[in-house]
Amino acid sequence: MSHNLVVIGGKAPSQFDIKKQYDKIICADSGYDVALAYNLEPTVVVGDFDSTDRNDELEKLGYKGCSHDKDETDTELALMKLYPEDTYDLVGGGEG
Image (cartoon, rainbow, N blue to C red; front, side, top):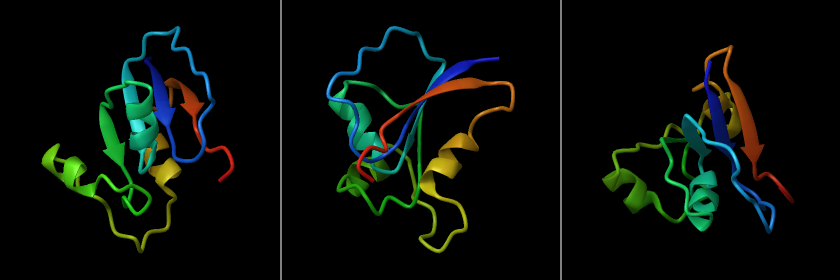
């Protein structure tokens, strides 16, 4: 079992103090921007990247956005990266 941080788009808390060690940091789409704002280095970034202006940067890092025509939300894609027994904290999503 691992403990992970899932970072999604939207307004994140103005103060977010990371007190735990995370096994993975998984970002959904513009959650990547949120992670960078908190000086977090993502393990993986998923989504269609329609909510971030960092597409070129993500591509250089080896991430390819999925199709805009999908059934899952970007958050669902991020959660699908977890194993059933994993635990996670979720940050972001405010005002969205």
